[in-house]
Length: 322
Image 1 (spheres, one colour):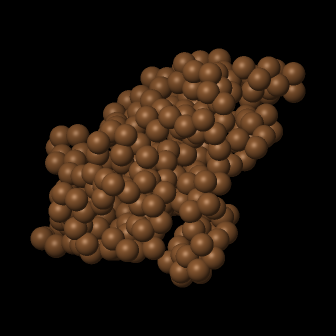
Image 2 (cartoon, rainbow, N blue to C red):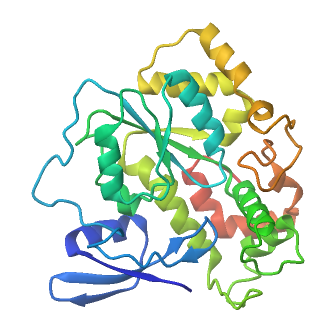
Image 3 (tube, rainbow, N blue to C red):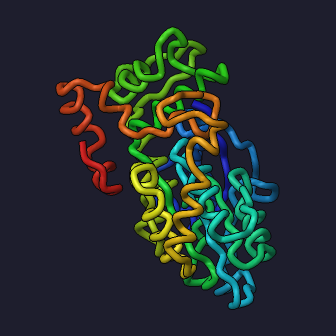
């Protein structure tokens, strides 16, 4: 397992640790050194190899109540997403309704994101895969009253299938390249690859623990600790007009039903994917298939019983059932 090592003020570390997982730690004086796992995508873990003095995990200011001076006359929408959950679809809809070009910051550091938030214009959407343990001190509406947080998620099994399909198409790391994304998703989720070397020797000791950790980092902790509006990919696909309207209501943006209808008629899976219809698949695209529920054809009834024992709690937190 690839690991990165960062140093933090111990009080912040303890908060992040209790909220986002249980990384191993060594203590040395007032500093806490811990090994923190970070995903290259939602499945794999890579080294960020960055230090507090550079561009890695940063220590939030401990002696100030507000670290960003915002005007009080702006509304800054921030979209926090789990990879392969419909990020670019919802982003396109929101940007069309808000009338400003969106700003992607998926690979920003907390300090870089803070700078972006200070500079964006009113109603300009900022979006990315923001991990709670790194960005909680920046994305805090109690300190930054202009912020409005929207969190996007998707059924975790569908999300994993889509991620595996993209990884396979890109020639990335997989347990077995002869297996389909659906076969691999089933085997990984059921624990059949736990502790076993993948094709290149990579090992995931406990996939449910890894899965649940990143779900907390990218979705659940935001919902628990911040005032957010949750959007499910399944609802977005089923009724984009209603889902977009609810998002805009949360953001405080008034828009007519006619305007909503015009936007959702123009911004569709087909228009975004280059003319493909929902169900026509391109694993390399941000808009892979546009159809939720693929996981239902992958698992047997016996599989579902086993999966409940491994994931039911984490799924319930998001309002999904097995």
